Image (cartoon, rainbow, N blue to C red; front, side, top):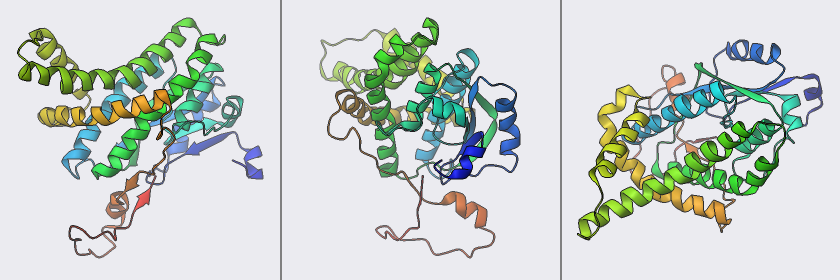
Length: 308
């Protein structure tokens, strides 16, 4: 963005290193920006090339499909706002500059930019039919570091920006309520804490301590309904619901810890560990040309990695 030729450009397309946009990506995104001067961002959906690699990548696919189907598509249709995913999107450079540009005060600079642009009155469009190939982290260590950043960053951003959102005069009270309550408070903070406390503290306590009782409607019916609604975005994985519930409960501990680190700006609040990708996207692309290498034994660490 600091090169001189950028001054002659109106838009910038952003991709992480493991993303593979189709040749017609710009033809399908730029018209939205050209024909509507109020739009700052056009966001495409992610398509995962290694979702079938292991059970953990299937679980991630279920969670992210809900994120795209509900949070982003609904946010785009109702409030013209959602969090920029940091990749697979096209920004209007004028909007990016109007919002103050990239800032590194948190580890979610993409979400920070989206919130600031929204407070300036800019609108966003999400294209669910436009999908860009990408890769999911396929090791638990990489996924855990990623989730720490994705949980800690929004909580820290909420702490820094909540009063700025409240005092803003350019957006409607309804949109401010949506950003503060629905986007930040419920989805980024309360959801993870409630999941951890309910599933990992209260329900086990009912087994260990007979005096602790939970009504069946709150222990079975409501959680089951919420789980089904979360999984409906990935019908092919409905049979994996039990594994997904256990997986999300384990991750709720890490996410809850990260949220409190972000809210109270504790030691790891600005920790940035690049998410390691194993290069499966590249393997699929070049698989027909490159000779197969023997599989590595457990304990060897000379894998070629692609970072995003």
